[in-house]
Image: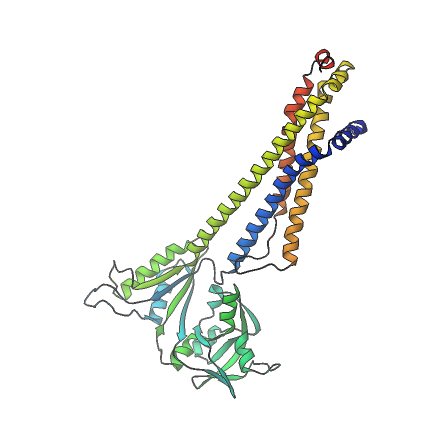
Length: 412
C-alpha cells in the first residue's frame, strides 16, 4: 500500500542532509558506473581481438620444413615437400577432418598485367574450401569452384587493390583476362578480406587462382605448399593436428623425435588462450566493481545508522503512539532502497551513455572494436545492488525497531 507520508519523510530527510546523502549515493553510483565501463571496455577489447582472427577459430595449418635428424637412410636437412597424394591420404585416413584445403603460393619476382597496366601481387592457388578456413566477402562474381579444380581452369579472383591498380575506374573486371607470368587468367570474381586492417590489406593485394591450374601452369605439378584444415563439430583441433602430423611423418619418413620437420599452427589453441585472458579481464572487472558497490552499500548502512541515531526521539514517540516494529523497519528500509536504487540507476545510465558515445565516435583500433554492454548483466547488477541496499538498511532498521520508547524519549 502506497504511504505518501512515508515518502514525504524520506524526501525531507534527504533534503535536510543533501551533502551527506550525495556522497553516500556517489559511492553506489560509481560502483555501477565502473562495472558498466569496465565490462563494456572489456567487450570492446574482446570484439577487437576476435575480429583480428581472419581465419576459422578452429583452423589448423601444417607446412613442411627441413628435417633435423637422419632417418631410414635419409640425411638431415632434407626438405619436406607435400603432394596431392598426401591430401588424398589425409582425407581417407582421418575421418575427424571436416575441411582440407591444399594451398600453394607462386614465388619469385613477377608482375600481374592487364593491357598496359601492371603491378606486383601475391598469387595463391586455392581450393573452394578456402573460404571455410579464411572467410571473405565476395563483392562480385564467384570464387574458385570444383569444376575449376577438376578442369584446371585458368580463372582468377582478385582483391580490391588489384582491381584498383589494374583496371580503370568504372570498368567491370569480370570476364577480363589478366596475365600472370605471361599466362592469361580469366577474372571471375572480386573479393574483400575480413579481420583486422592488415588482413584486409593483404587480401586486397592478392590474386587467387585454382590450385590445380597453378600446379600445371607454373611447373608445380603434384606439389602442395601447405595445408589448411578444420575439424568436424565437437572434435578438438589438437586431435586432428596430432593425427595429421603423425600421418605425414610416416609418409615422408620423418624421424619420430624430429620436431622441426613439420611446422604447424593451431588457431583454436591460440583462441582459447585469448578467451582465458578475457575471462581474467571480466573477473577483474567484476571484482573491482563489486568491491566498489560493497563499499557503497557499507556507506549506505553507516548513514542509516547515523539517521537512526539522530531520529531516536522521533522513533520513540512513534512507538509510544503505537507504531509497530515493521512500520519502523519499512521506513528505514525504504530510505535505504531509494538511495541505492536511484544512484545505481543513474550509474547504469551514465555508463551505458558513455559506451554509446564511444561507439558513435567510431573509437576503433587494431584490438578495440564496438564496446558494448550486456543489458541483462547490467540490469542484474542493478537488481543485486538494490538487494544489497536493502540488506545495508536492514541492520539499522532492526536497531530502530528495538528502540525502547522510554529510553528514546529521555535520550540526549
